Length: 222
Image (cartoon, rainbow, N blue to C red; front, side, top):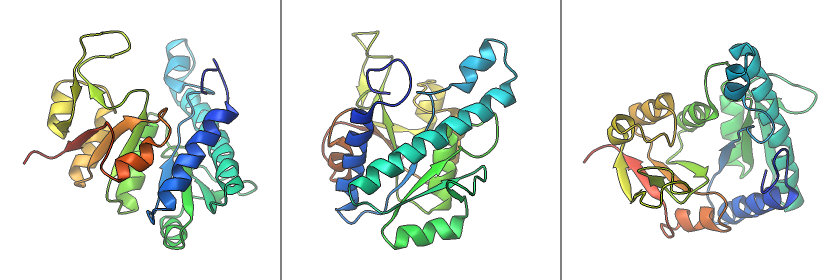
């Protein structure tokens, strides 16, 4: 969305595509779960009276739109990309098939997973943890609005403290809200480290992959 109030900002899409391209060039296999809040937020619509399941399905369709836009931006930059949707849409993308996705990644393609888990009442955070576990990913990276996990929203609270490292249980017990509880629990069950970084900072993705820059790492207690 960039600085827009709604929809797609081409400059932002392009910058994120460049960041992904640079990480792929490092020899890293990348798959992406993409949200749809710039177009439609199911939770917000449900709060205003829409049936929650129906609202979530509309939100899933929004993620497909974003996924296709990201595919276009990546392929313009020479990155082979496949979109797989948890809700079958054979005319525009592949259905989600785990082994096919693994094969795409083995061939160096970026796989963009759309439509969340394909089920209402689950966020794209949970979809990200699920797909990361299914793809046997080494790490789940959450690109967000700020450069890590804070004790409060740093955009509202100047005294908010940024954490360098947290455990899964600390995130849950302190209700830090960086990802929903289902996503944190799923990552914990599968021993999947979570790294939270600022998706708006150009080059931050590659920095994180080199162990540099500012981010918060969420892991099991030592």
